[in-house]
Image (cartoon, rainbow, N blue to C red; front, side, top):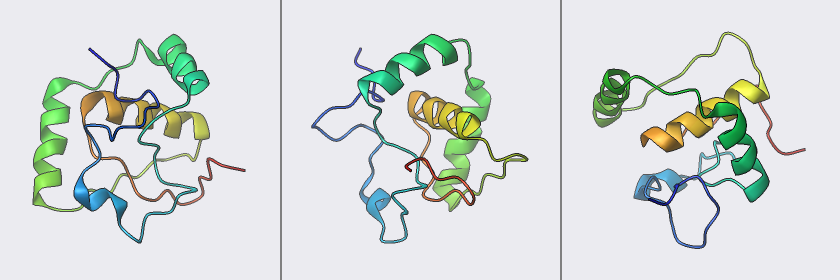
Length: 105
């Protein structure tokens, strides 16, 4: 099965029609695909992390009801990358904005 987080020309299964909203900040929004290097890093260091299936189902139900706001206690690019990876693997809608996180220089 192909991993949706690997870079490709075709749209991934997580790219929904509403995901390309004008409010989406390209510098802080989660990445719908990773480069080969980022994918290799995530496979190597994040493979032991997973979201519990019941939590994934709960998040899907919340997404269906409206916007979901995630609040992180600390702003860390590595944590943000981990959540981006987990969301892609779990089919959870990616965030559009992260205050204080800028993934691109």
